[in-house]
Length: 226
Image (cartoon, rainbow, N blue to C red; front, side, top):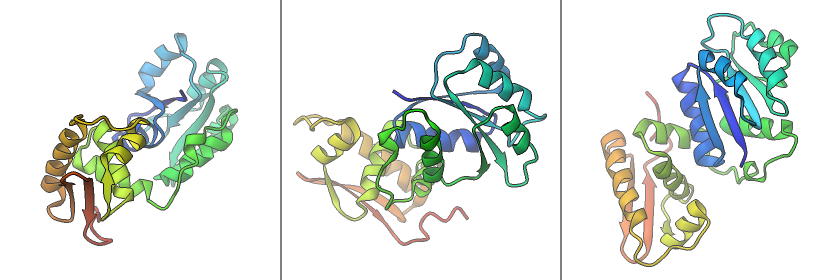
């Protein structure tokens, strides 16, 4: 399994990348702060990529990036900075293979990472008719768990259409649904309540008896953060 490490103190960066890597791409993802990174370097496990978030760094993280690139081989290092960030060039000189501007489109981020991994990951090459950023916004604002978010994104991709339990099980767990298994019913009930509490009637999920589940949204402005 592809392993990703994020060094960050920013909740927004951590939450968005956690959604991308654990829910969408189903990678092994871990986030640590800068102090913990020093300890990690002494006992570093093999990872495929390390993201160093510079958006809330109090000082130039180039020395840390240099240590990571030296100790974390063969993992690649990518840095993240704000639009007006000033440490991008330093990050490149320290060994970062790319510097991303935050906020960043999640699909673009995943594809940029995939082009830089020694062995590209097929799971990144997914259909892109659904916005990963909108998915992430819905899941994070509603407070969905990883399991709930994985179910939600399958239903969201089929907005207004019935998704059978078998199709849902194949998409989420890569196996057919077992008759009598009520796990999805339980998760969908929790998703329904969280959506009702968060979005009122703008987004809803219903159980279609003997068929499956259906998610409905109410217009393109349903997820306006304002």
